[in-house]
Image (tube, rainbow, N blue to C red; front, top):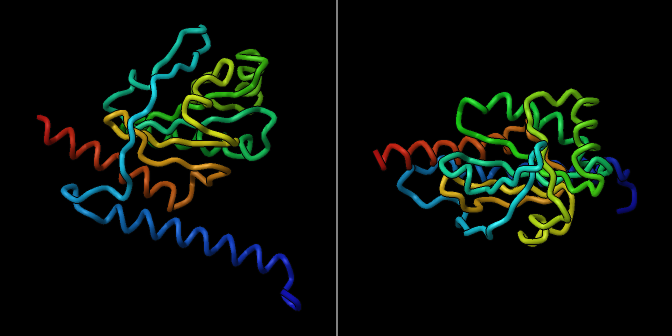
Amino acid sequence: MPGIPNRFLKYALIKTCLVLFASFFVIGSSASAETKPPYTPKALPDFYIYDTADKPLRISDFKGKVVLLNFWATWCNPCVKEMPDLDKLQKDYANRGLVVITASQDMQGMSIVDGFFSTHKLNNLTPYVDKDSFAFSSLGLSGLPSTLLIDANGKEAVRMSGFIDWSSVPARTVIDDLLKRAKAGKAERT
């Protein structure tokens, strides 16, 4: 647009996206536990990621918890930018039933991931690798970072691509909503 500096257009676009994102999740989170969630839970394929001891981990190992599964790589700038927020998110929500899993797509394996975690002082996250990008491709993902929010029933609730500010109100609102629904579901089963 002539006469309008690019920085103002970028600011307006970012602000519009955040407002739409926040509106979607705030409206959904204000619904009662009896209403349908603002998403349609979707079954996930069976896949593995690996821990520091090269032990396979299935997402079904976390059934009953809300899981934030983030695919990232040490060479991906937006991924690197997200990691401190994900580390803080794990710290802030660990006692509330959220598990943050970061699955590296680095082909060099766990050695580079361990070094990255140490250098960046990521003390609240556990390092995992997605060998041969099996989980990434099984889930039909195509870009980094990619994140899935998985509900307490082990189903995909939300899928996001690109950098997310995990300290933002919209991001925390959707997590709070999933945790609230998990707690309500647990209360119904007891």
